[in-house]
Each structure stands twice: as C-alpha cells, then as structure tokens.
Length: 69
Image 1 (cartoon, rainbow, N blue to C red):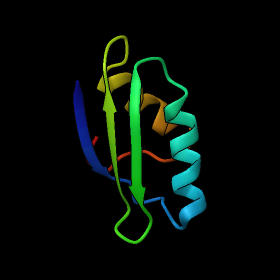
Image 2: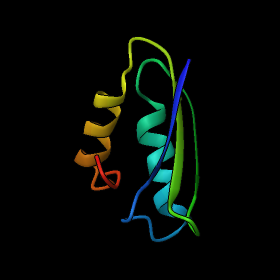
Image 3: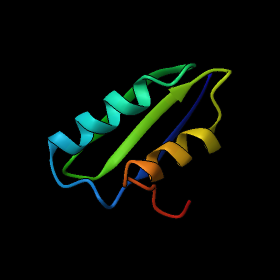
C-alpha cells in the first residue's frame, strides 16, 4: 500500500475535506482518505489499480489541486 500527504490550498472548510473524501474515495484502489481543514493537509492511501498521478489528476479536476504537484 502506498500513501501520500499533501497540502491542498483550496481547502476552506470541512465541507471541502468531505468532497475530497467522497470523490477520491470512489476511485478503484483508494483505501483511505483523511484530511484536516485547519492545516489543509490530506492523506491518501491506495493500492493498485490507483496511482498518485491518477489521484492528483482527479484532485485537479475537482478544483483541489495538491500544492507542488
């Protein structure tokens, strides 16, 4: 299993975190999504068939692009 913690500057509230959890959580292979609106940090755990590029692409599509990615 792989995991990554990233800062997502567009997070403004817990609703934003819930949107990320719902959207990313629906991807095949994603095991867990946790986030904190105060720090704007999100941790995602996944297995195949998911990979970080596909997850980052989805985050960008829903307007929550990870910082530095």
